[in-house]
Length: 157
Image 1 (cartoon, rainbow, N blue to C red):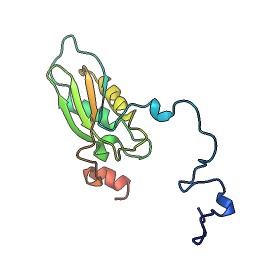
Image 2: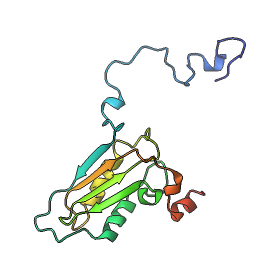
Image 3: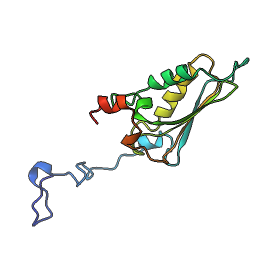
Image 4: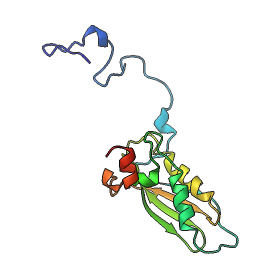
């Protein structure tokens, strides 16, 4: 926004825009907003998929689990979530269930409400996997140091 520092009036090319660049002077919209339809992820979130196995054969194959995690990509970053370091822990249980803790690059990430569900569904599709729980956590916060060498190379880090 172009502003004359000696006055509080915006330049004509920004007429009607507030400091955030949005037109907030118009009438308020009635009804719920996008945030009303997304899960509250401020304190974490658990997505579930799959079903208990009738005859579990033990823990799910670790390579198949890793491959499933690598099949999920953040739509804003051209690297899979595993190599980005968003997967904090994977617990493969004897009954075939899988419990994952993961984070996102930032709490305000627009995919916060859907990414854990994508991860849970990808893992539930793996042979030998029963119920899947994917917990979204914010502590410790994600940092670029968690990325794999492949991710660093792809993102020019």
